Length: 387
Image (cartoon, rainbow, N blue to C red; front, side, top):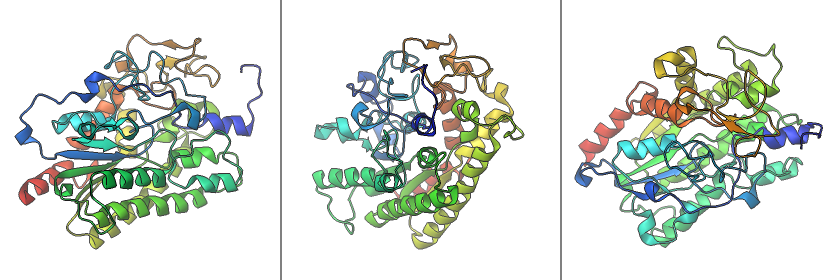
């Protein structure tokens, strides 16, 4: 691949925050219930949605591009699971720390939940490479080369199939366990912008369509009776090494990241928050929390040492020249890539995904800090008061 010229199509192929992999059985550790009093659990189940930042193993190599399709290889998963679990990370993701905090086991990916007891504590429908906008949009705009066909609509389809298997059928059905279920809607939409890089499709068009489809999915959950919903905004995508690698050096903001990309994510998040406020008025019995990924990430970038980080841009697992240690032709998991000795000191894992240490820092800012509106503790208190 190193002899190839990087064209718009190849940049589009690798400028994604998610990609696919060969399926492996999930780690036995990932199915272990945390040893705390089950009676103390505020929720009995979690249903999760999103892209590679939330996916715990739904990816499949045949359905996505190959640029980061090496997630089944070492050193993915080595920090915590000791082998790959098809998470795009060296260990746990935000959703894993959420389940730990709620005394629940790690969520089984939907594609692995073959037995009824696999989904006792919930299911993860998030899939790497997923878009907010339906795949046909990209096909119609000749942007479907090697991109993952799943979208948030696919995840909702999986969710409906799962509910049918649990005898909870129909939009109007109020599933009896939804009162004790947390719905975690991970960030989604980064891929939509990435897939259209260099095309004639405008960012405004992507934002309008993505917010519309995400809003439709959220409304479906609320109509089905979801009472406790956390929605993550887009992260500080302009600080990912891939964005830094591709962007012009004069396109930088006050923290040294790609200004245009960060502004794009910021604007997207403002529109998303406005929609969530509409839903709060429309569904007053539901508690809807916005998780501010953009500002949480920015807080770490502004004071990395406070969170234990020494490397804010250098990739832990990759290959290439300083300052990023990143090359689109030799990504993490390929033979020419190397891995750092201290992943916990790095924010970035493979150039488009974060380290376990960064996910842990962000999860603590969500669960215990002031980077959710309203605070996550408010959701827990409301759950406790409503029984």
